[in-house]
View 1 (cartoon, rainbow, N blue to C red):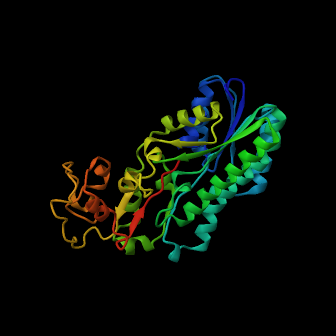
View 2 (tube, helix red, strand yellow):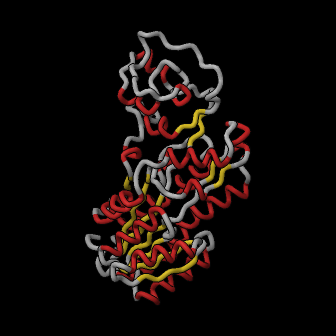
View 3 (tube, rainbow, N blue to C red):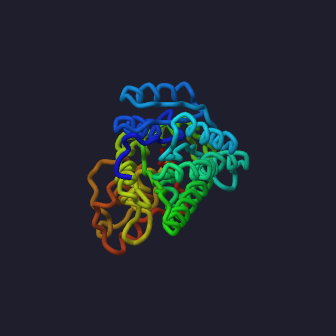
Length: 340
């Protein structure tokens, strides 16, 4: 899809974050909008911002985990606008909890929104997209739809599911020669409200010594890597180029070390459990990384004389040192999601 002018785009999760910035940027390009969210007060604010660009905007309070609501909204969009060309299945939530202690009700909650919301949105809108003659499905997965991390088992499951679902859909549409295509979006750390709105299991306080509010504050700092405005531009560029997958943000693009192990991104987002415990013996000077960034010891790896995780890519340890510098898996790493 080379132009969004005079098209109609439906966006879920449009009350804030990437959903809002996508709506405003599409409106700026002359695209009419149908936007939805559970937060109708903030959704109206998004509509006001988008309407300033002279396009038609309709709003709907919507819970994407409710199949009947999603299907009814898809039909409503076509009635109101005459057609629909794009569906951005963007709504998502976060959950931080070890798998052993995770409540099934919380697991069902996150899967209902992050995974089933995408499935419902795709199936509800696909016939209408085909009827328009030119359509595109944009499903939001995550960097954590490409890699798994501790305490994000449910979030990983939902986003890996979105990735597999969307990639299979893209293949089917290509084989069919359909006038509709699909793109899977994998954001890294995006400055949005997802951490504040997400759930943190109370067991995390016992495991880490940090309150739920402290976890959320730290998560906000760790995911503040790419602005939502920049994310929207990257996503729309991917749609214009009909890309199968788009990694949003430099952190997402630096996903892995050459060795195949999680790279600097993990270090930047990690909250090392047991940070206040006695440190293990330091590495010898011959194997220690050279790091002068001044990062506090508690934010460094489990090798205290080694480089801090944020600067690790710039370090030049010996082969033996590099092996020893890797995180000590015995002292668990608690990581927050990077979402939209």
